[in-house]
Structures are given as structure tokens and as C-alpha cells.
Image (cartoon, rainbow, N blue to C red; front, side, top):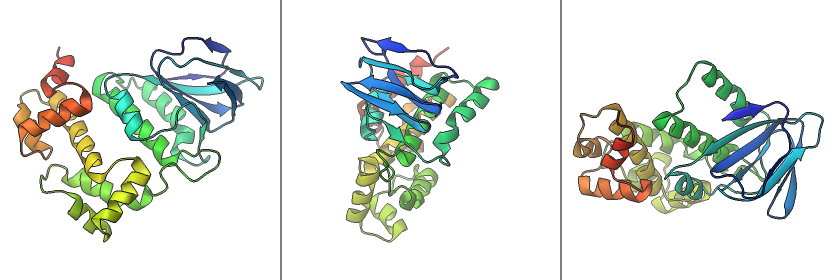
Length: 254
């Protein structure tokens, strides 16, 4: 992550090797990608996949920008599952949390916040979900217009993800709607089903446990995050992360 209070012209014929996000905090600049040029005003940004050729330069005397680059096994699956638009401007309201994210990031860096490993992954995931929640395209409603209505479901999952009995019926009952209606709301907001969201949440929590307490076995971690069968847990972890739980843990070994 970084902040530049006077962005210089950039020409990347081969693109950037990682996912690349950039947005304007003050002034404006022109961003060219895929044969189109977009003028990024304050509270507007753009997300690019790796290796996408692009160019950008300031239009005003000073173009202040904030950027984030990220990569890894989960980068593509997460951006795809959230259905975040790429290579086109995304904007947000001046009072949204995204308008102040550069200040929040600066505060964390000032106090030596550790952005390596799991902490860094969580920061990226938090940013992408905020982008999904508050982002708008061409002045339309937010990319996740039904997000607020689903808040009770998020709280339920946060509190009960370790309960293997948690499922679609209980989640739907929380909003007093049918399972089919809940499926529709989730797919409109996130591009995935409530069950897929729950699985991703459980896997994220399992990663935290795998790193935080190395004494826990894979089976114990599986049970703690709501899987009754550790083989199902390992299969799901590998499908969503591209590696087994033990391989993931080894990445962060001393």
C-alpha cells in the first residue's frame, strides 16, 4: 500500500505483475487501459488484473493517489467471487469509509502494523469487501445494494460459524424469508450463495487458527470452524486456497 501526493506519469506496456488498485484522493488524472481512457476524479479508482498494459498521468497540477497491490493463491478467486469490475472506474460517496482508507492505512503504517502473512491478507480482503459494499459504477447504486439487509446474516455467521448445524434454513429464518429468497439476495450482493459465503468465512477463520496455535491438529481446526469431517475440510481448503491446511501452515513456519 502507498500514497503519492504528486503522481508522475506511468507507462506499463507489460502491465503490473500483481493485482493493482489505484484511486484519486485529490486532483484528477487520466487512466488508459484496454483502448479506453478514463478520468479519475476524487473518490474514484480502478482495479487491474496482473499483466494488463496501462498508462496514467496527472491532469491537474497535483494528482494525489492511494494504491494497493496484492497477489497470492487467493487473489484471483476472491476478486472473482466478489464480482468486482476490473479495468473500469469505480466510485463511492464522499462519506463512505473508502474515502478515508488512505488515512486509515497511513495510521496503521505509522504504528508499524504488520502487513505480512495473515494480517496482510485480512487487510486486502477487508478492502475488497468494502469496495464491493460501497463501490458504484457510473453513478449507479452500490455494487452490493442489498448488503445492509444481509447484515443480520453476517452477524449470525460471525457468532455461529463453529456450529456445524448452521445452514441455509437457519440463515433464512433470521431474516424471516425463504431459503430461495435468501439465495437470490446473496447472489445479487456477492455473486455467490450463502453457503459458499459461509464456507469462505470458515476457511478464513481456519487460516487464523492454523497460524495462531500450531499445537492444534488439522482435525481440531476443522471442528473449531464448523466442519464435522476433516476430510471435507481439507478438500474445501484445498479448493479455495490452492493448497492443503498443512501446506498453508508451513508457509508461515519459523
